[in-house]
Length: 338
Image (cartoon, rainbow, N blue to C red; front, side, top):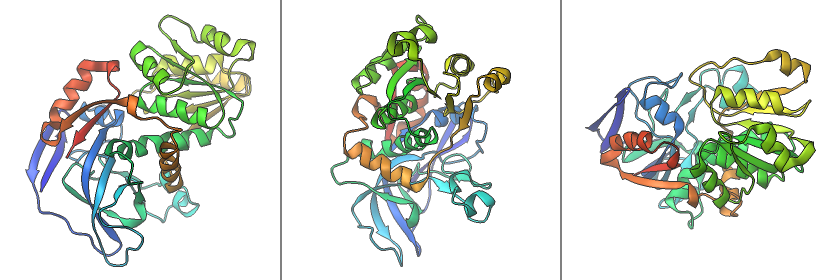
């Protein structure tokens, strides 16, 4: 069985390993698509703060159920599926209160434990998320980042009728914006890339702004008039975006930090205190977020087709990262095909 290992920053090594088998309570998956995430890119370039090498990458994926182990029920062999890429301890305080996604001993596929970058992969059946037959493999691979958006938007509370700014129009920012719209918010998306803003429009987010040419205060006034915005989602991972959010969100407003920062940006805590802002972190998702992501994609409330950029065969995975670097903001989601 083929397996791709990120042995060190910038180095992917292929090896042939024995095929795994599903044990009791497990499912064996034949991997079909792997989406490359911004976190994967950071890990490849040695800039992910929590990456451990060597590791098999891959946590956004779609697969076919190849076999199930003893005791597994309700999982059909041959069905499409994906799975939560989280290993949790079940014993720490967050796990005991149901917040297993922030487990004290959390390990994530492709970062602290091996991911799905191989032909066959075994996963605990309770992490499995069945997919509709009509889903494309690409839609299945989009469930993971869509679940990030589902969870992040729930962290902001009820957004119906609220004015929301999403800072950053990459894949995660795009999906967060779509989920804000689905939850009834009025949404403005900002980015430095006209290419990504055009994709946002294709995903039914009409209010966009290029932050390089239109300051956030002006964009907010143009879209929301004097009301301003109540909630900001920082999806760019940039100091300037955080500063903009703090400076311009309405008093008593909410800032949700979604992006993974590989550097530590300064934060104006005096302004946060003076304006009584809520600064909220968000990490990954719970199982119900995955299930909602599947429903939202299936209902057309999350549109994924415009985010598909390019496919690379499994044996050309190392070529995908230079491509992403060269394309920059002109690319959205790149897939590895098995």
